[in-house]
Length: 316
Ligand code: UDP
Ligand code: MG
Image (cartoon, rainbow, N blue to C red):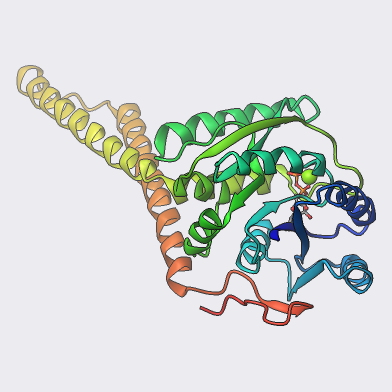
């Protein structure tokens, strides 16, 4: 029988796991054509998440878990899940029921129709804060413009993929992972479906505004070199302006002699150019930092405990 892996990253989700499990089991018990395995990734939780997972595993033979040695982040958890999945298809699901398991049958249908991937898009974000939504929209506009990847607004990680696509995603073994970009970069035929945005069933979101901002910056530097080009274009633009101004000053001095006052303009220009140089160095720094982290080639995750016999670690 064909097999589907349900991959669930969990970070301090003790409050919601039982709810999630009941709901998911209800959905998959009605699908008779496939074998299911639920693969929980405990991303270094400090609550009782791991105890609940162990209990699920002892009571159900279709439950697997991997527990990290510390919190590595959702990106790492998803990567570990995909790397350890053996099914024909795998679906990524949040533990907080914000990704309704009820959509799984529809996703399977898309896969049977010949799609390589079925991605569920969040429609409407009314429940999130207005400022956050504003920045999220700007981010998607920007990244779609300046990178070769195409990410629809609201496209999250809630998606089912076939083996070909899973293997492609795993092959992209970069340490600093930005899945939205990776999924888009690998290509494949994707069916888009949408679902109503729901609030998390229990517990709290792990994303602060600052974390999201850093994540957005990571996404841009991971999939676009446009900022580097902006720095060079600014440099060229300022050099040309400075040159024109230089000629202007020389001509003016020759024609009218030297007039000493000019403090304000000198300071203004100095500060402006100083700012641009610092800004450009900052951009360079972002990319150098990326190269530095990537060159170290550290594992994306470290497994502390698991009930998979031949679990795949990420010692590169
Ligand atoms: N998550 C994780 N590691 C982290 C942060 C989050 O595995 O460091 C998991 C979390 O348990 C949940 C999913 O990623 O299953 C989405 O997290 P959350 O609901 O906090 O994000 P939001 O839905 O608010 O974007
Ligand atoms: Mg959530």
